[in-house]
Length: 215
Ligand code: SAH
Image (cartoon, rainbow, N blue to C red; front, side):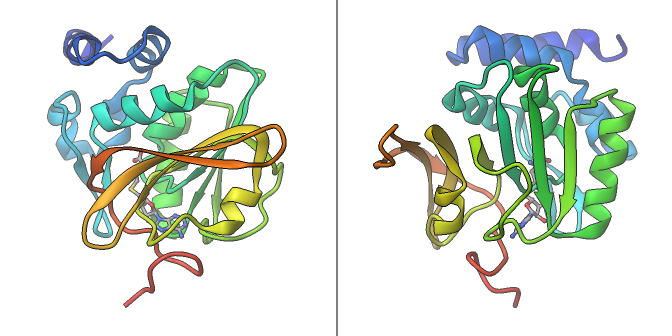
């Protein structure tokens, strides 16, 4: 594969950072250069966020790896992503849930939803559906979800997203105004919610009804 060696080197570095094997294997299968603007392809396998237009970024590979690892994604799961962006994180999650699973990904900026759809098609990723909507609230098709991955930072965890998590489900979400923390949210079989802080992060804002305002 074009960029194969660079991709293997990047994934090797993530291995030394303690990322689990199934996430590393999935990342090896998803060509990140197909998810960045053409002029940035040469930088696709550097472990850094890159601009994708509209003041948004594709997350750094280590951040995608950490979120996927925390979510403990597996075959057959029904997943919601809020913040499609380039579609890259959705594609990695789609590898992890396999053909019997599906990723529903919500994006609020129309041209980015289009960019992601094209990228996912070019990468041959069939089990992702991109939806153009405000993902901070809403009642999305195929809810409730086994897993929810929010890739933009919310002022607080939106209640509608907690409601769309299945009992036994997991959500990762960056939360914070001045500084942000990555939360892992667990919903027990009886519906009790547990929240754990997993560390400081930097994400673009979740803009919407249950997020930050647009101005
Ligand atoms: N997961 C992406 C990262 C994208 S950055 C990737 O792999 O490339 C976060 C994205 O969240 C941006 O594209 C931004 O437009 C989107 N976003 C922000 N608020 C949103 C909302 N309320 N609903 C849906 N998408 C939102």
